[in-house]
Image (cartoon, rainbow, N blue to C red; front, side, top):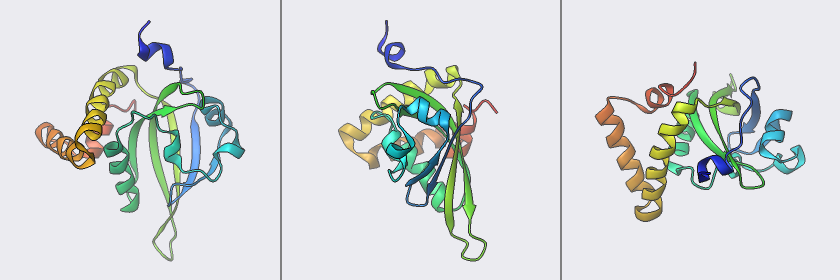
Length: 169
């Protein structure tokens, strides 16, 4: 059995994962299915930064692109490889929605809506994410970022278009 299959856990295609975090990425809420999938209790999740749930091989360059969108007050999407408490992993298609204070125009909260990622997207992105992650490990984040930007330029895509081509809809 391949490593990909052996450690991957299925995500129920009929369930929605919901999480709320502040502008610093600190988790304030998670729904029951998110807790079940991640194998963490609400007590264990509350107060921790959302990025502790990312798989150890998730390339930082991808999550930084999404985070920069948030900081620029833009909704965005991301396909994440997440990690459970027992070090298994699962793939999510995530829509990030924002609560912006109408008076200050600052982002107050981010709402994370996840669902099962498309299997074809997983197969393609696993290879691409691995390449980016290995670049980050060997050459650093800036090298990985430059590669991603060149790739997107070659494909005539921006970050959002790149992610959207893998979303179910």
